[in-house]
Image (cartoon, rainbow, N blue to C red):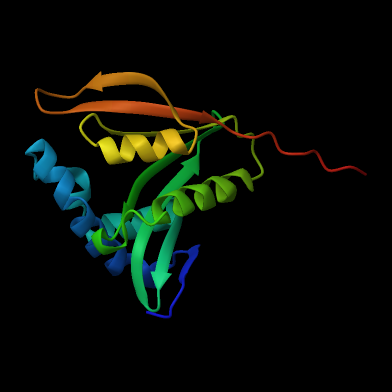
Length: 167
């Protein structure tokens, strides 16, 4: 192939590719849970564009193609909420999801406000996701029953304290 995957901040021009990747990446989740109404599959382009202005978005690019994406933001409570980590099916199981997650954690830690922990969630049947998050240091905090088909597993990881600048 000869090209390297580059992780960078997403911009407005990436919106359509992110939406298409999200739709492709969440097909297996929809199948797993028998639910084709999952929010990542029904999100509009307008809604995603709005999120691009409100959250930190990172993309993984292979040449001109977006092959991975993740988003997140730090709330006023100091919690970095991470969502919609998605990697193109042909690029999975090569460490790209972990690289995206680590890059977003670093990006969130660069902010000015306090950051105490990172939080994310996944479905209870998404064993690959649960393994990835455990390898990245996330631990289960709560389990939330959504309906008869879906239970969300909430996970958290403490943020590494930033070094104070010395004068």
